[in-house]
Length: 279
View 1 (tube, helix red, strand yellow):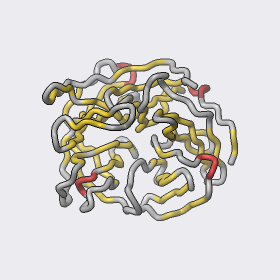
View 2 (cartoon, rainbow, N blue to C red):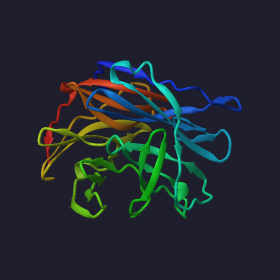
View 3 (tube, rainbow, N blue to C red):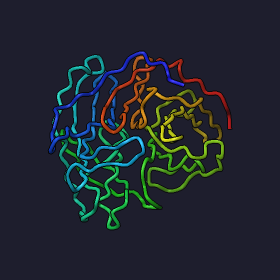
View 4 (cartoon, rainbow, N blue to C red):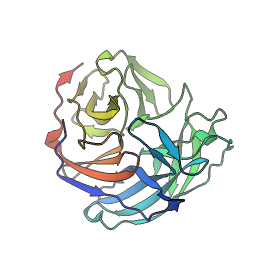
């Protein structure tokens, strides 16, 4: 199913070229403040990924950086971007994957992000960091249970995994775990937003080399789960990567990377969220 969109805005940053390729601009993260001001973070990558999930590095090493932009949700065609700087304040290792990846907002000043080069084994590892103007500071490592990616922040907690459902406290202590076989194979995508008596997220699953999403609802007492039917945003996309879900003026806003080469902010009417099943 292709979900009904009320609007779609492409996010186009200043272009950067390496050899014969324009660097991909993908996997945006957004935060919308109460007055409508918006912070946009867009990932810059120096590789091309194909439908069979093979990839070509444009120039070694594989490096990931970000633009940061600020505007208002009513003026997102006019965003001023600058390169996001960062000071790790932690040891850096000579790993295959360099730079920062796949940011999610915790709030307007704090983020969770993946930084392989801060891990001695070079595997994806998660950290929190603080946004100060156009710079990331105060990197703090989160516990490493395995290869760490795609934790979903909500309130002062994280969803660590969907199946089994594992919920971690702000200090990353396990506070809930239960089997959830009906959503086996789904992984974290977005942060959670307040929804009825709980929180609403987007999660995803790859089926036949295509990414499908569902809305996922978790009650405040963690005892009720609801979810939607699977959907895509675009018929012919093969990668759709969601990093943010935001709510403003009775609309939902989704930040979406497509095929690891394009970035969008999708606007949805709230009535597209049809939660069909309790667990």
